[in-house]
Picture (cartoon, rainbow, N blue to C red):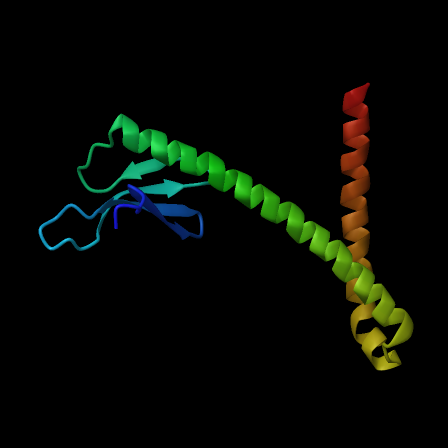
Length: 133
């Protein structure tokens, strides 16, 4: 059990609950003591109860926040790349397999969605090009 990390982060919607892992007790059981809650969006770290976080606690939590933000950013990009693949599959489906009834069911919603996306992408690209001037 000596290979266990000193901290465990239970991921939740907006961050994590941070636990200190302890195996140095008489029963040699794994004990997880909650020490803080972390909000990944705003970086807020709330110690549990009256607890004072040590510099080592804060450093470990800050490192986790930075790593977690990198992981989430990579996932966002991967999700978009998957969406592009899926749009290509939808195009192939619409061209080769879709019935008239299926196309009638999804066409207006899909066209509005694609129009909205195109509008945002064109605006953002124009903003980036304008910023380069």
